[in-house]
Image (cartoon, rainbow, N blue to C red):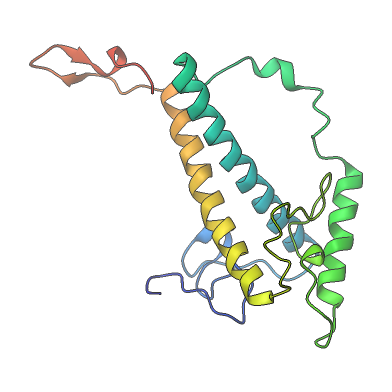
Length: 181
């Protein structure tokens, strides 16, 4: 693998030697501890949400021509995080760091196993117990989640902003004349 970010087997997935906070090359890094664990869990959860969201927006956009509904309907969602969820995440993080070198690899004790589902592997990808396979899949999950978060931004921005002026002055087509999607 070549490039600015090269995954080293000795480092956690997505933790690159020259990648700082938010992927800024050679930027500052987060020190180990509860804050880092919380932020890594948040990135995984946001990436998972973005992957599902972008698929839902594309599906809805394909069916109805609009990827937007009323967000006012989602204020009482039972899936919103609570203080209990944060405490559960901290327990998982402590368990993951506390495992000895001779302990068997437990995917359920890794960062990303958060409430309400905990560790969820319905297709049994981790049944072989391979740490290397798990870490490779986790790195892929992080990459896909980051791309999906950017894709969601690509849906949000055109909904609220349009370039001024003409897309094609000779044909008289303005940017505001072109629909989203």
